[in-house]
Amino acid sequence: MNEINPKTPVAGSCPICGKPVEPAFKPFCSKRCADIDLNRWLSGVYAVPAKDDEDEAGERPAEGEAGEK
Figure (tube, rainbow, N blue to C red):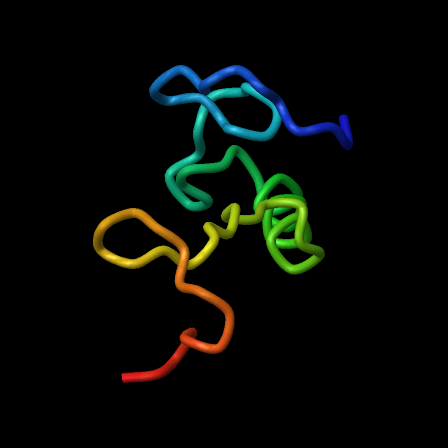
């Protein structure tokens, strides 16, 4: 169960294992699943993709112009 579940969790189910949510550990079913999720965040499994710098017109700045104002 170390793989990320690609399915969207059903409302009221744990996003890690799919069991019913326990109010004490919401949105997870247990401390174990909460710890698994925290470990994934801290180890970089969950990452927001970076976007290349573009100006307002949607074009990349020419070499040497990046950061100049």
